[in-house]
Image (tube, rainbow, N blue to C red; front, side, top):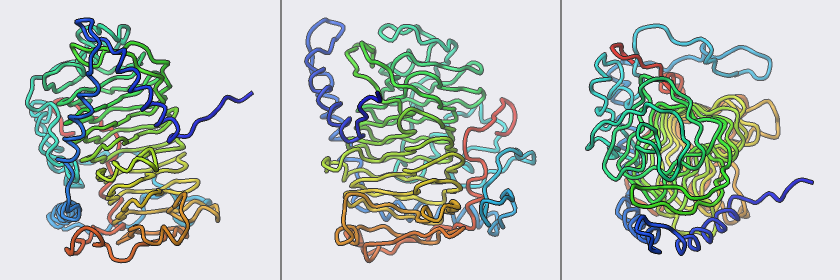
Amino acid sequence: MEGLKLSKATKFFLISAIFMASAMFATADNGEVDSYWENLAASAEARAKAAYNPNPVATTNSFNKDVHRILEEDQAEPEIELELESGSESNYTRRSLKQKYKGPCLATNPIDRCWRCRANWASDRKRLATCVKGFASGTTGGAAGRFYVVTDPTDKDVINPKKGTLRWGVIQKEPLWITFAHDMIIMLSQELMISSNKTIDGRGANVRIAYGAQITIQFAHNVIIHNIHIHDIKPAIGGMVRDSTDHYGIRGESDGDGITIFGSTNVWIDHVSMSNCADGLIDVVQRSTAITISNGHYTRHNDVMLFGASDSYSEDQYMQVTLAFNHFGRGLVQRMPRCRWGFFHVVNNDYTHWLMYAVGGSKNPTIISQGNRYIAPPNLSAKEVTKREYASEGEWKNWVWKSQGDLLRNGANFTQSGGQNERKYTKEQFFKAKPGTFVTRLTRFSGTLDCQVGKKC
């Protein structure tokens, strides 16, 4: 008989309850019962309120101006859709990533222009920390610290991890810029708990987090995850797990997300390739804010991204996320993203596949969709880009969901709502993004990059 399947919101409440209960049994190295997680949660709440931008329109405008500047420097024209495969499923069919670009190095968006196409990238890795755009601007990860090289792909001891492993690096209290000595597949035996001020930099190696437990960023800040593959993530049963050099405690069963960002601020996820995880690919929950997710490639998954886990958790009104230059590709179903409460700038992404819908939400999120390309599936009942849940039209008609400069293909339709864009925020007009006709160029190198030391990346 099929087991009980809990909704994400139900799991959220159960996890919160377990979290409060486990705080009573958490184990510090001195053996005393401690208030470790309660203190972290209080600090995280203060950081979220400090990171919250009361004028998010200024951030969206700054982002869009940077894109305009780069393309004007290139004197770029919109790319005609010759890069799309021909096929019978639609008049405007899908991008092919099978034929890799073999020409000279191109950096086609402002994030990549900041660091790519420099032959010395490997000796100047920390330059990446100056390149983030959007709501996570200012995130530096481990730039203030030393380099730490992962040499051992194993994950055998989650309470006393071995030096040389990824787990040893991410739990250190000091800032670290983490790199990898060679190609490796890391199968995590329990959640990987990433502490503050860390960069995971996969450039120069083929690094895969796969076939094991998930990455969790909980009550942390200032984290960069760059250029790694994450796929085939499974739930972990939980148990004693170390999350810092002086603390370990009981973790409940993890969902099997690719990455969970829980109560964290200033997190930048860039140039990841993700697919086929047990739950979501990326979940951003519990008052997380100042987040940018950029240049990713996502395939073969149902619930892709969840931004806000509960209709009853109003603290997610502080959530502000930039989703930019990503390619949502083959085998995706829904939630690209699914939003609650906060402010979400969905800009210059390429949506070439979905089965149900692309962008959805509940509880009055503000969704500003600018310069994306939405290619609807052949299914006549799935042409609508958006989905509003748990609200009547009388309620959701006031939610600010705007489409500006989006390229709607194969019958795609974006249902807008909410009156003027500037409602509740500022009288400043939104600066127009580069339109969806530029998306092929802007997302050309989404996903992980094949960076080789001594060569332009």
